[in-house]
Image (tube, rainbow, N blue to C red; front, side, top):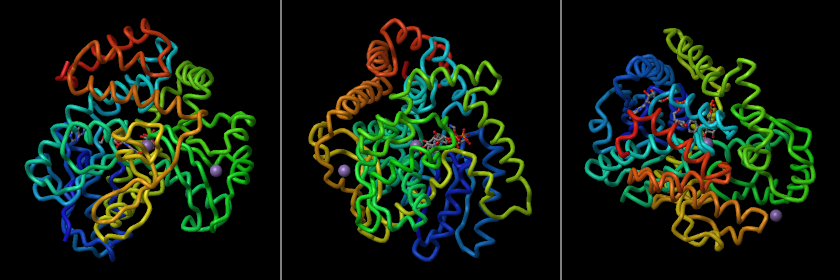
Amino acid sequence: GLKIAVIGGGSSYTPELIDGFIKRKEELPVKEIYLVDIKEGEKKLNIVGNLAKRMVEKAGLNTKVVLTLDRKEAIKDADYVITQFRVGGLKARARDENIPLRYNVLGQETTGAGGFAKALRTIPVIMDICKDIEELSSDAWLINFTNPAGLIAETVLRYTNVKAMGLCNVPVNMKNTTARMFGVEPERIKMDFIGLNHLSWAKDIYLDGKDIMKEVIEKNLDDESLNMNNIPNLNWDKDYLNGLNMLPSPYLRYYYMMDEMVQNQIKDVKEGKGTRAEQVMKIEEELFELYNDENLDIKPPQLEKRGGAYYSEAAVSLISAIHNDKKEIHVVNIKNNGAIPNLDNDVVIECNAFVDKTGATPMTIGKMHPIISGLVNHVKAYELLTAEAGITGDYRKALEALYTSPLIPSVTVARKLLDDILEENKEYLPQF
Ligand code: NAD
Ligand code: G6P
Ligand code: MN
Ligand code: MN
């Protein structure tokens, strides 16, 4: 049987993952799931971990669920290490989202300056985890969810020897919502993605092999279903969508509607709604109250209020595809290796990949159209510089990374942001 280690086991998303293992119990024999957290997360770990135990028992699995603060014990001889931790917790996320707003810059947990700060906090921890994997379970696959997931996958694949893939629930969500729009099972929909994590487009969409891009775009103009719970639903420009002839990730609003999105955030804060972190704090409180009920032994539907709902579909089905040598197509964050010719070979992209027991091989995508190639290369440059700054702790590299982001208006603003970020995250930035 398999040993799975989940780093950040106290996450409110853990029932999502357990539900995924339960759904696939016939094909995925899991002997042990180690849920790992740190001292600060111990209370959450216990509540969500006990729910996980009840879920497993109710489903009749003989999987052992172990709750621990000992990361090495969890990683030792693990077959899969899933990372879903948040350094500094939601308090740090609230800072990531609020600091940029001081300068009228986008405050978002994965995109722009907020994602940059989160990356700097995450990199030292993910590097330590990779060191543990290299020493204690060098054959393990690392499946990373920790945001910014593409940038973290880039860092791991560039600076360590760990076998890793980055994952996000956006592609699965885009496919599932499209299927729902057409009233069909998701298996009948094929979506070909191009781009980076949270910077992606569905380039082609087929239903039973028939190209349905035009219909999807027409429906999407009026239909609000192609959205994530964590992203405000501002309407796309019709000329933009029609000309593009691709389906943009909801995250692309932060780039193509930057001014409106920032104004929207500033308005939310002014009106007392707070940033998404502050909204999530409330949802989380509600969730943990539910989880604490000893009669609860399933994944509660209230978890769907979170942006990461259904991520188990991406995670557990991917693990099963590797373990069972399924030769299936999954959307993952891995090295380009020529799939997109007008992007360097050795950078991480988010793309359809052929998955078997040797891992994931990117499917050929072809050249990016000029309408997206500039932005993708630009954001990739920002990601590479951020990864390097996160590893080295070099102030000037960090400044260069930040002003390189297309979401940062000037070097002056970048410097102010960087100084605030470094100051307010001191305890989580040992590298600086
Ligand atoms: P959370 O704040 O609940 O954090 C999860 C757990 O991580 C907490 O229990 C916390 O104590 C723990 N933690 C913090 N530092 C740790 C460390 N050094 N080692 C081990 N555990 C540590 O966060 P969440 O909302 O559950 O999200 C978790 C992560 O998953 C975030 O990074 C988030 O961005 C990411 N996420 C990604 C996707 C995706 O599409 N890739 C989807 C959902 C969430
Ligand atoms: C989406 C993204 C995740 C992101 C999450 C935030 O699903 O794919 O990468 O972290 O939403 O959701 P939250 O509920 O925490 O705002
Ligand atoms: Mn994501
Ligand atoms: Mn096409």
